[in-house]
Amino acid sequence: REERRRERAAQQQKREIMSRKAEEGDGSKDPNAEEDEGDFDFVKALDEAKSKPCAINDLVIVGNHKTKRKIIERELQQVKKAKNLEEILLTLNTALEELEALGIFKSVDATVDAGPVHLPNTADITLVVDESAGYGLQSGVFVQGSEATAEVSGSLKNALGYAEEFDLTFSKSNLGSGNKYSFSWLDSRFLGTRSQLQTQIFRRSQSYRHFSSYSENSTGLGADWLSPDGKHKIGYELAWRELFCGNQMLRRSGGGGGSNEILASKEVLQQAGHSMKSSIKHTMLLDGRDVVGMMSNGLAFQMTTEVSGIGLDPRLTRFVREEVEVVSETPLTIFKQLETSLELRLRGGLLLPWGTSAWEKPTYISDRFFLGGTGSLRGFHIKGAGPTGKRRGEDDAEDDESSTTSSNANAKRDALGGDVMFSASAALKFEIPYAKALKDLGIYGQVFGDAGNCVGLTGYALDSVKSTFRDLTSRARATFGVGLVWPSPIGNLEANYCVVKKAQVHDKWRNGFHFGFSTSGLVRK
Image 1 (cartoon, rainbow, N blue to C red):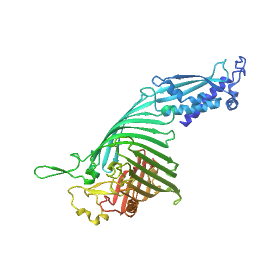
Image 2: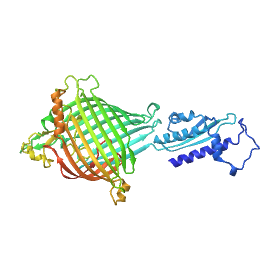
Image 3: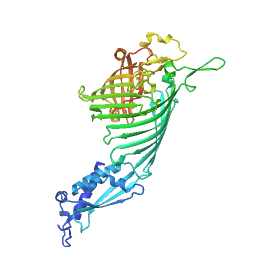
Image 4: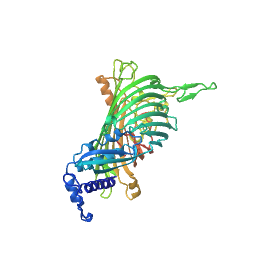
């Protein structure tokens, strides 16, 4: 694109100079003026002409059969404000790139010519666009552990001529753990600015029966605004949520009569029913990392604040949820011929209910924090670390303290999550020696150590807060290991050998090989 832009600018500049060099200072042509083109000094002529006053006289747009003229002219506002030839060419090249970035044109080209003889120091622009078909179909499969999710998405761009995009998405899991249907509309130039606005209606059916013996249906609508620099995202969501532990959940078959019994823990059962969520969420992302070869150098920070309970309905779920993540990466010179860096990652979260009856019932389980899995706490199963509740019908034999030194992955307990969470990770990342093929793919090795914990919060009283943070630190989990990382387009795919150093009763973990995608929002893709 850069080479094409330079060529386009050179052609435009030459055309403009050749048109103007045949004119007198008063704008009239000299019929006797002749010059050997081979002796013409283009660079000198350009230097003389580029700073001379020049304004846009006319703009002709060709090929916009669907696209509204004002959508194209919106990207050319700076061109119209240009005051000389140099500014016209620079702003025009920028405008062409912005038009191509809309994703609704196959190609965009422009020609700059001298204006009419009676209007000296003017230029005419002819813009030729080739509109794309405007529809697309995408599909993909995402794997996390033993679960695979297939997604199909169909999009329709610029159907109304405003560079808008409509998208219909459907996804389904092989384990029946989740289905999603959504229809969205995207305006990539909201109110004529570089910000984006996306609205959607959705229906999500998510099953957590393997982890926590419940399923959740969520139906609603939402809107998200993204700032021009991509650093801020503000969203609103209104959703009707249903949590149930009915016959879709894990049951135990009875005797000859074939009766079924719900096995969900009492902590999960007491949350069954309907709830309304009306929340505003703000995400701030500051990423100052620079890519240096295979590694990065710098800091990245992400903070997400969500306030739920916006409205007067007493059934609204009311809480404040804060999550912060910081990543630091520093190149090292341990090995002269191999790229190496040290990555430090810290993540923390806090969930606080608010309102007159804030502590009369527990926080909603789907709003809590969970730990375990790649990108969270390696070596532990997904949602395998943290508070749990005993499923109904299970005996207490599994409560043996020996489970702190051996995997408890088959324990019949529900993961409950926590209101307070922290996780920390340190990884020494390095280029794999004598493996050029892996380097070409961007695959590197790592030696890592993780620690983290999540616990419940029982109140704002000082004793409750002290007890919570005492449990958070004294009962922290720890693991270390070595593995390979591939920064794929959809996230970091990791293959690690993990050794769990410290675990608690009822944690679900396993020493050995683990595969999965990092769930962090600050992975370098």
